[in-house]
Length: 421
Image 1 (cartoon, helix red, strand yellow):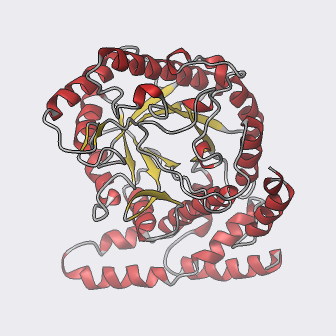
Image 2 (cartoon, rainbow, N blue to C red; image 1 turned 60 degrees about the vertical axis):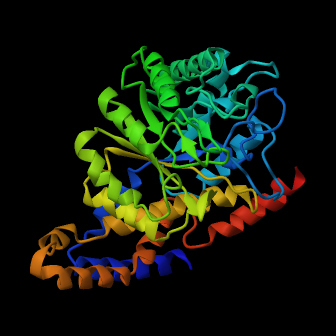
């Protein structure tokens, strides 16, 4: 489809939406202001750049597949991310794990990480207009082999991980100062037990103590914003997870931190979308990790499914776009890793566009009571409106391929770059 054809179909779609009271130009302007945080670990299967033994001890994580082209060093990873960003409309962010620091081939343990180890990322991101977020890496380490880190009963283990997270917050604050925008610092730990235990209270008391010590140092919210990510269960923690949703929700609300909702970290019948309007009245901001669980927290690539559409709709209907931070979090090594980034990011942005194209005033008028039939009918009719034409116009307007034309560039990049690794 050429530019003229895209513009013609967009003009027709614009008029159709206008007939419903929707300003497509305003919707596109708002969409362009949204930044997703693109997770670096999709590009190298969570290998990182530390000098350490292979394996993900105590991780609760599993990357499957053996597609060619995995990034083997920081230059390859940045090149792959740059290619992905070139195919996603808008200006977005880079989400790093602490294991992706540049350590110069030296063995730098996690409790000795410094801002200098992330200077290279900042120098790469700055001219590209990218902001950086950071996550502590509380897995894939001998001191996580027991399955416990911050909730460990062993004081030496707990001390190590407390120091690691303190280091990460120091790095995040440094990044935030230099990029003149907050660095989102999100904490997830795999702590839990595979089988039935007898002292859940003890583990959570240890976790509480660790968190309070970590957050003794206060940073300006202009530099770093802290979030806590819960989980229902993980590999090796099927029977008990110390950092459950209820635990972190209570902690975040009483300590004025953000809660992070990962779409794969709840029971499949739970709706993360529904949780947003329940939590927003009590918290300033929320972090989302958008993933796609298939039967369990399997971290499949995000698609434009009902869950993503419901999530985006709830964000927009709650008028919370400025209070909710959206990051992607999945890892799939079964097909082209660059394509996985692009597919997931574009799916999330499409969901947000669909939500922004709703006639919100009209829907509110129909909400409740005897107008239920009219409301449901309108919601059904909105599904048939040509949002795809608006999306294609948005892509072309922002210099990226419309529809599935981006696949050509990913295929060319695979032949030119990935297949030679």
